[in-house]
Every structure is written in C-alpha cells, then in structure tokens.
Image (tube, rainbow, N blue to C red; front, top):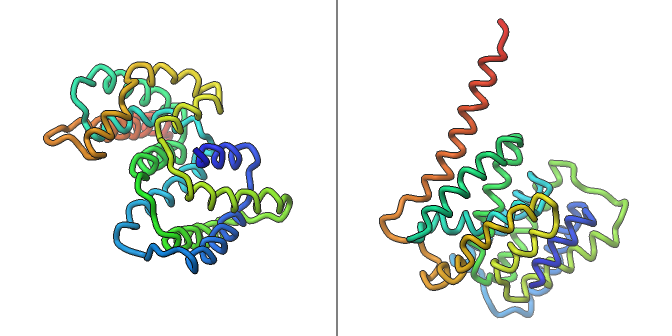
Length: 237
C-alpha cells in the first residue's frame, strides 16, 4: 500500500527529478545487501515502472488510474463483461476528447504500466530504471532545488514502495479521491467489482481468442480522426 502514499505524496507536493537521483543512489546501496540478481524477469516490471512515471509526467493527474478496471478487463478480454467494456469505452472516448494528445498518451501508458506491474524486481533493476528516469528528466529540465526535503522524502518513499506488496485494486480505488473527476468514475468499479479477482484467477493473462483489446485502439483512432476532421474544417489556404 506504500505505492498509494508515494504517488499521492508526489502528486500534492510535486518534487523535482532529484527524487529519481536519490532513489537510484539508495537502490545502488541496497544492491550490496540484496541477494536477488538482475535477470530477464525484471524486464516487464522495469518497463512498467518507467511507464508509471512517464505517464504521470505527461498527465500530471492521478485520477486516470481510476480507469484501471476498464483497461484490465478490456485488454485481458474477460467474458460476460461486454456491457461494462462497451459503456466504459464510450465514456473514455468522451472524456479523452477534451484533452490533448499528451494527456491521451499519458493516460494509456499509466494504466497499461500499472496493469503489468505485478512482480517484485531486483534492486539492481530498480536502480537502473531510476537512473534512466534521472537522465530523461535532465533533458526535460525538470530539476529544481526549491524544496530539497520534498525530493529526499520522495526518493525514500520510492524505495519504501518497492519493499511492500501492493494491490492494484485498492490503488485504483484510492485514486478516486484525488480529484472530483475521479469521484465521477466510482461507478466503473461498481459495474465490475470482481475485476481484480478475475485477473488473479486468470493468472494475470489474456483470455484466449478474445479481441476486446481492439476497443482502446479504435477509440484512439476515432479521436485522431475527429481531430484531423476539425483541422481540415478549420484550415484556411
């Protein structure tokens, strides 16, 4: 549950990218006492951690995580969930139509990354991930020395979050309370209250021969087509 506290903390306190430098330093120290070595199993969890922070940086909001049940149910293709998938897809397209592509892409990255971040990973891989994030934010000029204590606390909380097990169902529910937009999405959790159990019972895998994952692709294509039409209509030679 520490990951909930961590993301809520960085959302409200807005630390600079120094938190990733501090976290990579602490993870580097922990590699000296941790027995788990770097392996190929760390690839997807590391990719998920990268996506979580990149997606959050693009959107700047946590309420996007409230849509996690829909993304999990749709991509995994759980049966008997067609009304939930269809209604949630229409609502998602409507909501994202009010945002630019930076937020749309960030929304997708945040939820897919949260979905695949399930397994624990080695301290060495976490150290590498936060070094990569440190370099990325260096070029994005996201460093600041205005509140160093917030950066230190954020870096420590990153390490703490890696030491505790997490439940992405509660993670998504808590994010409902970070924004009034999120509270409006509470009914998505009510429409499919057992989505997390389905995910676990299916061993976190996609249902065979299910093509519900096409829904988000079609939504993004429809939004892109809509913006192109608006651009053509407003174009003046």
